[in-house]
Length: 360
Image (cartoon, rainbow, N blue to C red; front, side):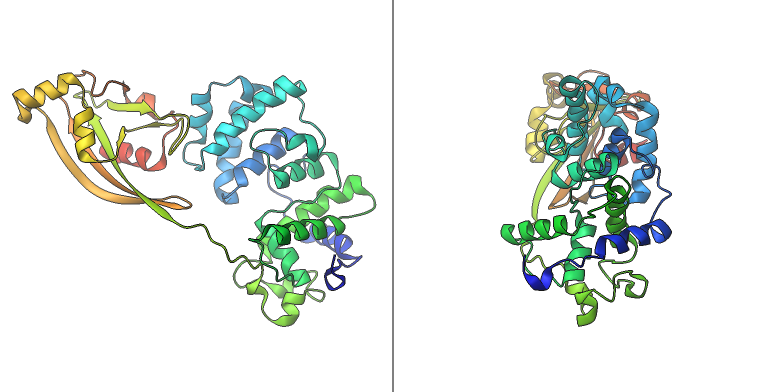
């Protein structure tokens, strides 16, 4: 570790003391050492704001009070409760992780980060969070808030898009951990460094005057806290054109299909998706093809306004065909008619749920 970047001996003690007075202590997953609740919150909080997670967290615990309840639940129910939270691979991994905890560990989460990281959907930082919060293991977490705090305090200007530089930051973070009274200090320290990044050491316009380590902070001394952390490599955005079929029968039921286990909107229920309007027409069931051939006016074919749906690294340019059929016959070879009472509780992509809600 470079001498200039060596953590101050008092850093951990300062952070622990600050958290007791100024940190966040009111959130429902705090002040608990239940690994199931901590793990659930950590997964939900990935790429998602606390205000959004609060409702989903409570809803999941109402339906799945223990990891065993979650493991035993049907996937459709899990995906339905997750619907709207986004990043649906988290929900699939969450469900599989619960099953593995039951099958491999007898329904009890393992107590070390090394064992936790072997479970689906649990990376190094999430494993460390559960291990430090619940079992006081001396391991470092490294989410976006933590990277921002540490690189600013130490003035660490290496490019974190380079693997060796991020690895070095991990090593520095581990060296800065508390060394005494770990049972109480580790949970408090881990919470402190997350809280500082979330409430004071903000990405834009950090509130340095309220920071407990501002006098030791090299970024503050340089007057350029916002230039840290340094990460130059950015993922290239892509785009994709989708054609969605919004087919409804006289009763107001909508034709839905379950998406494949991989790819966009994996394992969710959705309006049928096609790469073009021609492909959509070609996929219609033989009965509808015959109806079109005999009397095209028997079907109400309407092109709705297109829209763009933004994912993390991809823009979806969506075109929607609304089709009113005069009977309840199959629209495609796969799928089912769903009433509002049915689809409301299904796991649906956000734009599909919006389309269904606005089409009624």
